[in-house]
Image 1 (spheres, helix red, strand yellow):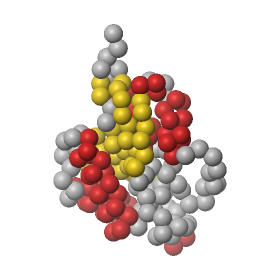
Image 2 (spheres, rainbow, N blue to C red):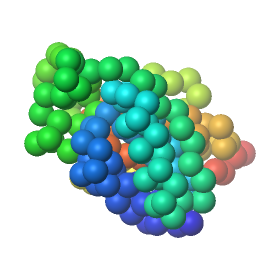
Image 3 (cartoon, rainbow, N blue to C red):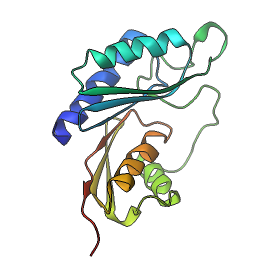
Length: 166
């Protein structure tokens, strides 16, 4: 599956989860056609429904890394209906400062598994596109994982290539 296909799949699945489940805390990443769903969700039923949507999405495989963490009473996430794609937990302090791109870059700098000097970050409607290269597949996977866990990220398209340093 091409990088564009991965990004499109991540975007479509994010839209489906937002419209059908109203669960902005699901993090969607797609790498070579394999969908990984992560984040804290409000119930096991929501996690199961998200997995069903992912399985029907046309992905080559689906990985469940979601954790059940109930939200406020009544299951409402403040702003959840009017702000699709928001992954910041309810009640989290407001962040004033870096853009989403800067936040992803800062997270990559903090992870020793990733050579951040070889990674470019582009944001398109909350989807993080990682471009450039890494020295091995583990570093490539780590970069995608790190980006997916940055608050505000709706999905990740890991377009990094693997070229070992000489």
